[in-house]
Amino acid sequence: MKVLKQVPDLINQPHDFCPGCAHGTFYRIIQECIEELGYARNQIICLGVGCSCNLNPLGKTDKFQCAHGRAAAVATGMKRVRPDTLIATYQGDGDCGVIGLAETLNAAYRNENITVFTVNNSNFGMTGGQMSWSTLPGQKTATSVAGRDCAATGAPLHLPELIAREFGVAYAARCAVHDAKSVAQAKNFVREALTAQLGREGYSIVEAVGVCPTNQGLAPLEAVKRLKEKTLAEYPTGEFKTRG
Image 1 (cartoon, rainbow, N blue to C red):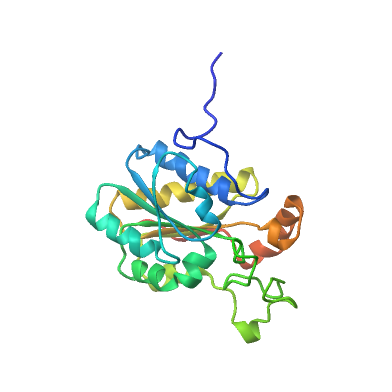
Image 2: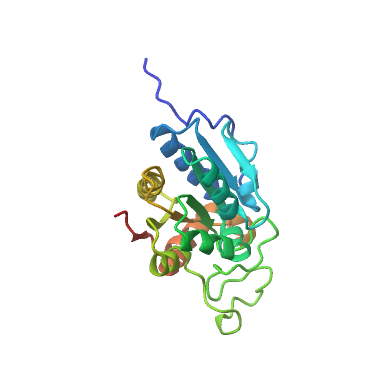
């Protein structure tokens, strides 16, 4: 009897993310695409600080744990030294779009030939659920207990749209991974972003919108319901800059 492969070869153990979290699904999609493109043994993943640190023991691929927010800068150096290696960052919204915003935007400004993957779960998940720049208007967090007041804190940051609008990058998109349809779309976007790098077209970014049931105080299915009803209205999925 033929046995279908269940996971990429380089993912060798279960992940430690909370139930309902997008990280495990999104990272698997990334590794599936890298494997299908023939770069499973020629890749380096630059990890941001946050829940993404849980990826350190997961899988047999080369990874580099970066200082908080510095993944894009580290990836830039790696790609310039090893242009034939697939170099990608994997970061949360806090690491990529708050602490590391300067590094993220500078790499996009220079159109560095790297790929940035970031998960937007609208809070600082690892440190207790504080408000992030991606937190929704009115959303309650550990540091916005009455709900985010955008008049006082500014409005949510739409990172891939900003990069697509302001810089001459190769590719920018946003996906979600909460159901089969969104997973299929996410895989297409991830493949496009990686193909842009492999074709030496320049900078690419894919943001995955996810949930954080633990810090939201919701069951996973309740968190997904909130994602579909509220989060995707603020952060629609789609391609904002296509290749070519």
